[in-house]
Amino acid sequence: MHDNTPLAMVSAIASFLQENLKDMRFPSKNGIEKTVTVHKGYLPPIKNLKRGEEQESDDYPFVIVRYLGEEDDTDKEKCILNFRILLGAFNDDAQNGWKDVVGLSTRIKFLLKRQKFIGSGELTGKIETAIYEEQMKPTWHGVMDVNFKMHSAQQEIGGMIEDDFFAKNYQK
Image (tube, rainbow, N blue to C red):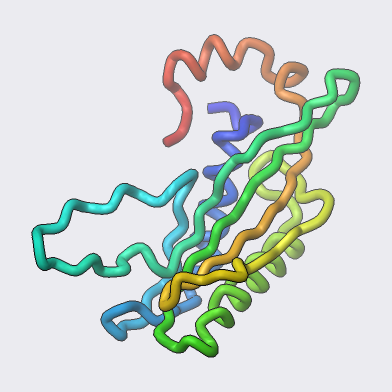
């Protein structure tokens, strides 16, 4: 697997965050504190429930690393990959639940700025962070937008698309 692709970068960022957030614990619906789970792309599908069963907020707390797109100037050696990091926490406290998301986003921001290089990418530009004004309490959500600079794919890996992508030899 070439590590100079958007898919490889999603995996690298997710692995980095999973490793570096493992000591953070947040409340869950059943009162037990849980560690953050990091997902690539989207949350896994919700299991079907029988009538009368309540959906546990098993997904919370979570971080999702999602590829948004890229800017690849063909006249330059580097391209910019855009990623969105979505954050979710569960907290019954209507006055303080938002603080969990702010704390998580602050930790991620400091981790990214300290590490600077993840996979084959270099953090570049602004780190934009926001929490949603309207929250579906007791779940709390926020978002971060980050960019990584890396060598332009065509210059470095040539036939990767035919060799790897269509052959399904990419990381899942």
